[in-house]
Image (cartoon, rainbow, N blue to C red; front, side, top):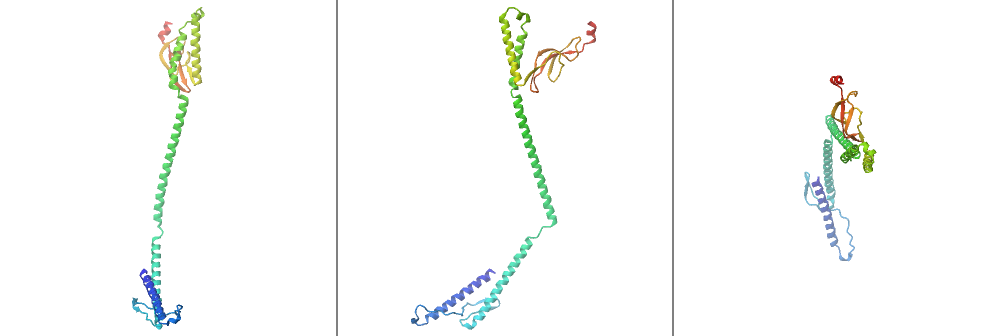
Length: 273
């Protein structure tokens, strides 16, 4: 089709060039008195080089009576060009119809199954990511709560020995000595007692509480039994002696109380009594 168009353009251009040349020759043969405004008459003769189109050659002579034959040949060339263009468009349309054929039901079902599998995988990943984020949030929240409640646990535990030593100092002074006339000893006792009370007040302000008293029932979760003793008239599993007081920070045992526990009286002990 492109070759036919190129041939058509060549034929038209040569025809136009030949007509202009003939007009110039005709104007040059006139007398000079006509001036520069020489009128170029309309021309009908067309000069074409001999070319073969189809089965018969197309030839245009310089005579006016051959012009209709040339027009007929040009019309035939245009018909050939139109038919070639229609064939090309028909072939393109047929190619487009072949390329745009709709997929079959089996293809659509296969694509649907593939997309459903992709959606399931993405949904599983989303659930896993959400679970990881929730776990991270809960762990961070628990760590912050533990830091607020038990951040001073190590420091508080190191002060328990101070409280124990103050209690031992107060217990080492007999009551009769305090009632005597030694005023310096009495003032020392009062000073140690005030120090211990102030330490207990600081403990309580930080949710540290002292526990374990004689007569309480033994609890293995918060008490540590150092020994057992048979005491007549005492029920089994009762705290009868305290070596060290126990302390708790909030609801956690900071230190278990070291105690002595009563046990059941044997038959031999009952006979001796």
